[in-house]
Amino acid sequence: MSTSGLFRFPAPLTRVCLVPWGLRLCEKLLLLSPGTVATLVQAAGKKDRPALLSLDEHELEEQFVKGHGPGGQATNKTSNCVVLRHVPSGIVVKCHQTRSVDQNRKLARRILQEKVDVFYNGENSLVCREKREAEKRKQERKKRAKETLEKKKLLKEQWEASKNVPGEDCRF
Image (cartoon, rainbow, N blue to C red; front, side, top):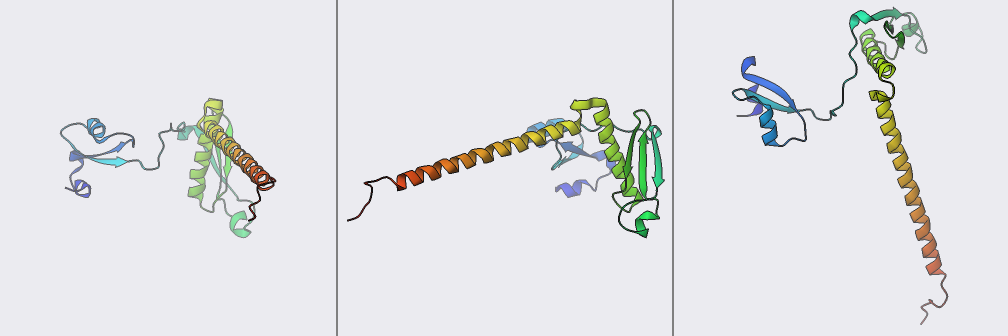
């Protein structure tokens, strides 16, 4: 029976489970409860990272103001710029990245989640950790590039020195 056929069963008989990539088949089967048919779906490309703090809608104040920047009448006369305020922390986010109000609302909430996470967790926040990891990777790349350059210079010097050694001419 194929996995696509499992989706045809009624809901109580099937269950879709997200299973981490690193598990073997026997470990995956242990995660599933006996007696039910289950479909294994692996979360491809998703890292096991903690989620950001959730925002309660009653803690937010949302306003729609007129746009700004280039675009002329299409942006300056429509109220598609979202101003989102988190009342407990006082953090304000203004988002006018797209012409769509719905997309700007989603983007503003994502940005506000990150800012609230930084506000409450400080250096332990997800955003700060990702920045530190990116900086560390950048420093490692710079170090490897510098080492490679030094090796090239040393190899070039050795080649030049071996080329200019007297008595090594092979003239017959």
